[in-house]
Length: 320
Image 1 (tube, one colour):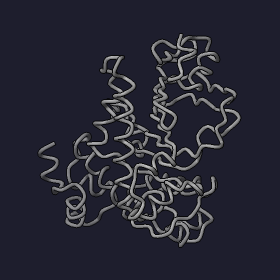
Image 2: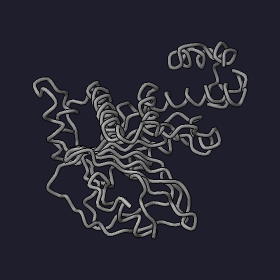
Image 3: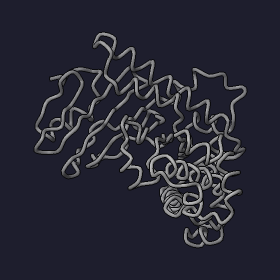
Image 4: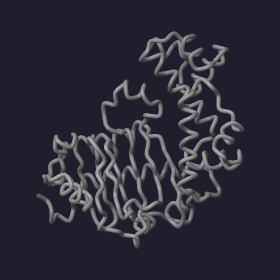
């Protein structure tokens, strides 16, 4: 057992004790009486660590956090829905089931109790903000990047994962590297992911960022869910803000801050992803897909589809 291995995160050791099992080669296999899957973790150095979790537990597990590091300002990168072979059925059950990453300033291990949720498929990377700041020239950073690296207020951003980023994630979870190179290889890949994501965040145009409290975050994510659950109905800001208990100005501002896009543009992007899914997987005709998603004018549907997907829906359905 790797109990004394300083490269294994303590949270993994505590989980092994809670489940009455052992860690082999930095990997904890979930005992069958508790569920299935695995959890593996790596402390690369004092500044960066990673936890890969892909398991289902029959019930949640709670463990005491004996390692409160409130002095360090850690940034977190939480990759969701990134494991290979995401099934079509899972996408159908949840339209927001797309690979994404949460990037935040909230410290992940400052709670006295850690809840290990029963269904987890994530990669969590924590990195010291001061260490990260030292890798950049600070003279020409965007407000988004500056605020993230200062880590002085609670912020969270969500970024959809594009194909080249997914390829790096696939290299991490493929487990194909010889053990003697594993820590070195995975640290390089973790830093590559962080660098690529910071490059994306740098492109965001917000000039001023607003600190987020848990209630704001919950509200914004409820709005996102409402939009994605009803892609056939264009969002109406007035109605959404009323339901959210938030002024239209604040709602629009915080939504753009978290997701990097306006509410309508975000909606339209997912609406077209859904149209592509209906044409490709469900073999819908162009008119069936258009009407399903609330379009009454099919030429307008074709125009919007081409803007987002790069080809018109008729050509797309013939080539996929």
